[in-house]
Length: 160
Image (cartoon, rainbow, N blue to C red):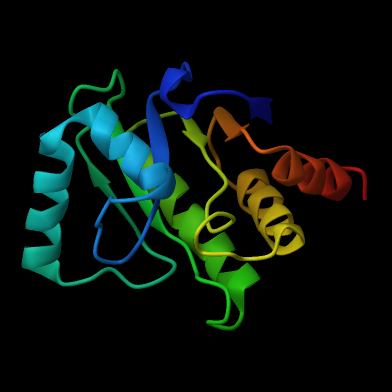
């Protein structure tokens, strides 16, 4: 776990906290999209047009546009109230790590998926992050956090 800027992480790819339509307007997704440039949203729109919306728990890769990464992995995390949020969040992150392995990437950084505008409670998120990371099969997974409440929830879960 690191405190910092996801866009400055020394990794092969970053994970985006995405919605099923890959509409990167707000939150972490908006920050990533603006930094990557219009190519990222254009590729995302093309994927959704070809395949339809992506279900909760899935992950898909796009190029990184102007960002210094080999790709961006869009993990579709759950929204609070969908039910079984912890399982769905573990599934989304596990899918993201699988996409990284399929591309031969050994290092990824991820933000607090589903903890922001999707409003999944932080204790649920912290458990899901740690479960997914422990089984990632990757050389280096960096949980890149900015908000103190999320950091505290992950630290509390680590201490269990």
